[in-house]
Length: 195
Image (cartoon, rainbow, N blue to C red):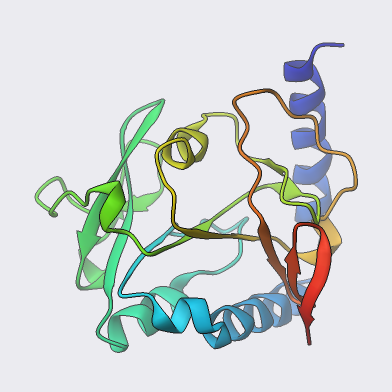
């Protein structure tokens, strides 16, 4: 089995697992992850944050996005330019988000483009990951391309019940040193600040 086939098989497994998660657990883990993230000194110190806009199957980032704007920080979110690329676009109001090409809410084309070097802190999604920060996304490579150019602080959000020990990776897959679950923060696979 190739790495691509392994990844696709794991995506199917995780998709089924995520669909069976209890709504109460999902709500509680969303709240705990948001609380842990917003309490991090690195998050609080950041002036410009890049954060994904969540879908129904991901950690709910809307409270995080609202908190970033309420704190007067600059916020950039992804905008798909085609099936393989994203741009960082700055927004000042979540009501500006519209369904994009992939069906995910994103900023309009008129939103200002953000240079990757302007971002202080990035919040990245995954379908699953391990505590060491090896992640499995949806397969488009959008965030790996972003990470190949980005050098700032980065954190990966994942529910503890979707964490896997073994993640099939390829050379172009970028590990993320910080993983945040409802239990707290893992740094390079080691529990760092667990609640």
